[in-house]
Length: 345
Figure 1: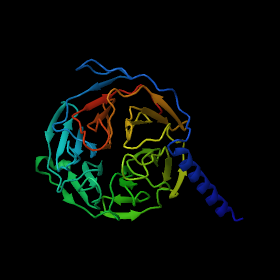
Figure 2: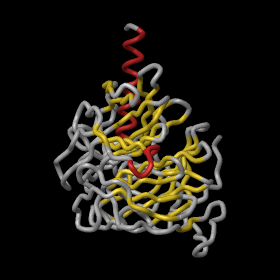
Figure 3: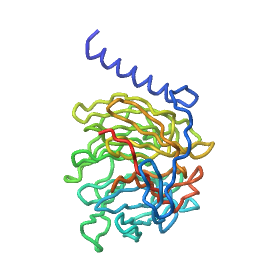
Figure 4: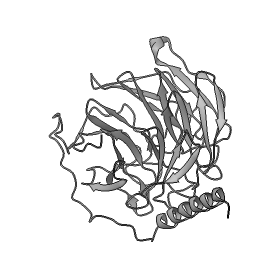
């Protein structure tokens, strides 16, 4: 058999194995459930391995997109309690620990994804209702323009989708996954040219995922297979190399989870929270790319789900907002912080 065909079959076998190991009910190597992590005293700066809190959001929220730039965190759209989408933009100043309002999104959206490049925040897709009205819109907010800045529409995505994840690499923005039937979608946006390119499909279709950049490669973690939180979840961990335009498989998560969030801190990927029919996951895991290995940390003190995007700044992971009960009707005012003790760099 031709060598290239053998290689392709091997990759497919790996993908199939990853999907099989990830389905709920499949045994995965797990550490025993750990204790809840320690929490710093109110107003105190958390020590390594401790959680704490900063000033709460102005309005309770979940299922929103989050981006950060210039020392500020931007909470974009989402659900307050009641599952009614909002246009609201809440801005948190990390240095002063204060919140303010920013210019509203052009339309009310939930389940979008967002990131920032060179001081410009981009919001991609999402939904205009709780269930089905996916959109392909892209909006940009140039924060360098100060108080006069307003949202500007950009070139639309190749497909309408929500509940994906975004990663920035070399000035381009990669958008992976989405609610069915767009769970395999993978495309890259070039802000300088305002153009899109469709890329090889994400091998495992999924949504409510997390994604991070590690050493020039895009890692996509976890998620669910159906649209709602009662659907099957996955522990899949797939990796895209932009140089070769190919996907490979890395160590799966410790257990299937969706509605998760993530951040790269000191070279380690932290993943926390999520939801299933039984409740909200308290899990806080880290992935060490040097060893392709996962470790479970003590549980987060207040589990959350329903936030896409997180911030690592001033040595702290900011876990902003999120739902405290399953579904989209429990948006919170929480602004939790965690000081990581681990390094993977």
